[in-house]
Length: 397
Ligand SMILES: Cc1ncc(COP(=O)(O)O)c(C=O)c1O
Image (spheres, rainbow, N blue to C red):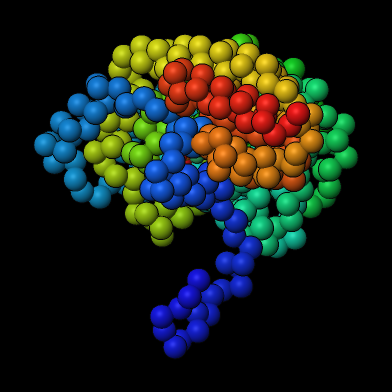
């Protein structure tokens, strides 16, 4: 980037280790093509295309009128922390108290704060690859050692627990798991989770369990490692409002963890954000306790789109796609095309007008795959499928 000042920008060394999320870069590139008059179908961004449920919006508007416009406690409003504690106790079958809950602006800060609070230079963190890019970015940022574990397509994008056993060392501080999973849509079964817990055994290793898509399951059930006996104290559960209630722009999520760690995460909140916006938290109580029918409506619509889009992708030469069991992504194997993932994603954007992400945006083991988000209308998904099929006919014969 060209500088307009004579003063050299002397960044901290750690900034060279901070990664990013390619989804936003692809979105910018797609927008630039749109400005040139091209018509792009957006399947790159990971956010529901639905509006936030009206009862939640109303609750926020009401809260604003009622004067919820001031600072609140750093860990979150007591009423919301209590509502989250009740929700997590009910859904995960463990007894959670409100002092184990920290409300933060989105799910992401739980990743940021947890790694910042726990990991020193030289500590090892095991995390899924392909996986949400912020894990690796943050592990590198704090100078810890990233230890990727490969997700395997033939295992429905779960990993081999024997490999996990082999990767754990005396320096392993944290293991990150994510189910339902971004970018593959994989869901860890109760047996998978129990096997992971068994491998960890009674070691003093914490697990960051990213469950931001917990309510978006199409087959099977959501099962948290927090529910495994002996793991409540060693789990940091991440969940939130962004995906479940289509509230990505509101910025509200939470972590559930042992109270002594919660106190440190709260101190990071005090140092960074002071608190999550007060009126959004009032609306968060309504989201959790109010009518849940929109959550089910969105889930069913994502499932309808998934079924149709996966079937369509499987008709395209060079593509083969498993049926994802959760989240709102599909992750086809494109090795049959003979193209590398990034090159294919670029070509589909520029020549076919379909924006998607290269599997490598989620780590090296994402090579051979593309990620499409089905957070777009069925009509646009069908159009995208047709455009990709036409493109492959022109370019892959
Ligand atoms: C796996 C995973 N974790 C966390 C997040 C962050 O969610 P939020 O927008 O609530 O910060 C995302 C968002 O895409 C995600 O895919």
